[in-house]
Image 1 (cartoon, rainbow, N blue to C red):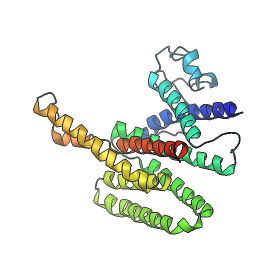
Image 2: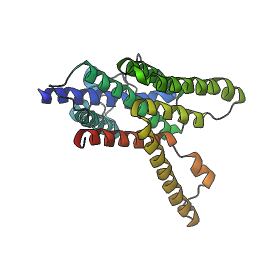
Image 3: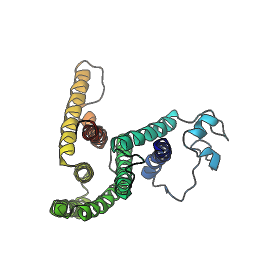
Image 4: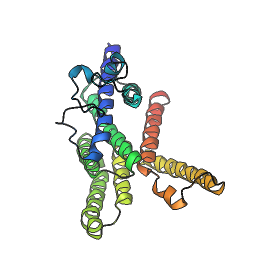
Length: 271
């Protein structure tokens, strides 16, 4: 019975993986991600149902478009597979099995899926364009608010903690919509702060502290290596250009999910 549960979770994971690639491609281009039919990016032909089955369509079509025979970028296939595997890993670390499958377990996993969707899309767009998409950020804020309500219901004593985060959300969003837009200032640093608060809500302060430390260390190492390249004449970019191309959201996302899984693993195997 557990095998069936994990097969279902894997299938859910690969479908979400397919959605992630679509969202990261379409959202920055202001394309609809729900109602617009999927199409081949090369020939623009609308894809049929048999072309849209994650992982399996890629295999059966030999990694090529059915209509124009252009090769499909293998990253779509890889992301779908990795998403399915990651869903299984998290479900296993959450101790999801036939014996303890109840409403609370299902809701916890569902909230993880919603959060992971936010993390992947925000990181994917940031890695490509070095910006935090406002609509994706608002999605993150909304699911955070819903999750906080859920947590307060099951543990009312924590309500004061989440009231603080709610106030921080309101303050940061007001600064973004009123001050920064009026002054035409870069909102990237503020968007990073909002992302960090969303991370805290879903993964706890302890994990996010480690996330921020690991992110700063990773960026510091990256900058040192790039400066060495500049000193040796192996890079034509200036230090300012290198600083501007660092996707902080991507670093935060990777380290946050890493520490989240480490913490889940610790709780499963050592506690």
